[in-house]
Amino acid sequence: SATYDVVVIGGGAGGLATAASLLKRRPTLSIAIVEPSDTHYYQPGWTMVGGGIFAPSKTHRPQVSLIPAGATWIKAAATAFDTAVNCVRLSNGDSVGYRAMVVSPGLKLDWDAIPGLKESLGRNGVTSNYGYDTAPYTWELVQAMRSGRALFTQPPMPIKCAGAPQKAMYLSADHWRRQDRLQDIEIEFHNAGPVLFGVAAYVPALMEYVKAYGVDLKFGSRLVGVDGQAKQARFVVTDADGTTREEVREYDFLHACPPQTALDVVRDSALANEAGWIDVDDTTLRHKRIENVFGLGDGTSTSNAKTAAAARKQAPVVAENLLALLDGKDMVAAYDGYGSCPLTVERGKIVLAEFGYGGKLLPSFPKWVLDGQKPTRLAWLLKSEALPEIYWQGMLKGREWLAAPQSLSNTDKAA
Ligand code: FAD
Image 1 (cartoon, rainbow, N blue to C red):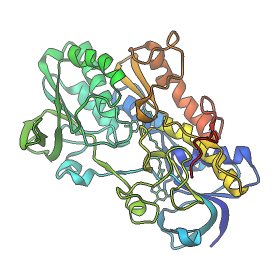
Image 2: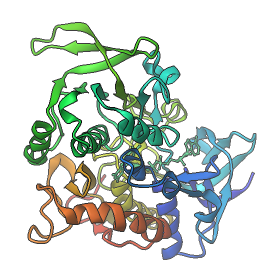
Image 3: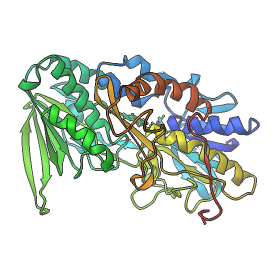
Image 4: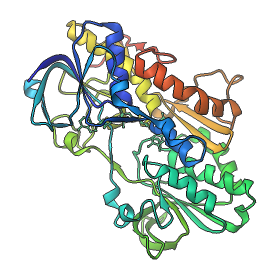
């Protein structure tokens, strides 16, 4: 088995961006990227596919075209982490060694946790923007729907792109409104959690749309089963006093967001915290116990919004800190928890939530240019035109537009 300076686990948003950032800083590094998939997906585009705005082809590229020049692609999955001997075991029977490791394998969409959901997906009016194969079906169903009941569900946190379940709802409702069908369609949002959005500053703007579309908000309502034949969804509802009851809702249209957990390969390793996530320091993104391991992206223990926008800011922080480690120096760069969620409240307008740890608002633009707490056309243009380019041409190539890392001051340096 070969040994590299750096082994990167996952060729998704976080893995590719970090590999590119590392090579930009130090072209002589030997880097291997462990990634089993031939195709890389731009998942933020799936909301737009489900809304009939992007063609599915806009949301994927061949993995081989994205591996940064100078990095080696190992087309396999990591199956076990032998961190005591700096080695990763691979699905092809091989193994690979490293001086430092970057772990960004994403998270697990746990479709199987809801009996009947996987069997119903893509037919019987059941869809999800959380899959490349099913996002186009959302738009098919939305166009075909004339009347009846539409359910949108959101599982317990944490999930990637926490706004995506309601984005699907707003874009669907907007279409029905434009087609003059809204009065014949009953919309319910079943959210396992207690609030519409985790950062209160954005809720008033969203509530305007909830009202305009006539959405019935159901908090503490968790999807637990789907009967595709009977077109029935089962929910466990937790009332304000903590008592639970089961409720069955008939539907004509169901957009489900799957429950999300840590990947098994991470959970079953020394990398995991109690909940199974990669246990990294919030600020340096270095593993809390294993000093030559860093983590970023959806799979980590950090409390930021699990978004590609977060990975875009995390990648240069990991790159700088990892190089400092290889050079025998202290950690140098700090991540502030930035994440972003462009809430597509209607076709042509977005409420652009941008925030860091503790829900601190971290807008990229001054308010007079773009007020994230209001629906704006500019934020829509950002999402539909600029962000895909920033992703493909900037982030994945190690060009750190809007993502220059902050330095870690001596006072808050991690132990
Ligand atoms: P991923 O990009 O998922 O990549 C993980 C990679 O690891 C994959 O390529 C996978 O094949 C690979 N892998 C898995 N297991 C292994 C293994 N054992 N060994 C090696 N490799 C492995 N973000 C935004 O910023 N804005 C948005 O508007 C937005 N909208 C979204 C809408 C939807 C519907 C969805 C699903 C996501 C959205 N996101 C959005 C979230 C964004 O896509 C993720 O946060 C981002 O992709 C996380 O990057 P990652 O590297 O952690 O994981």
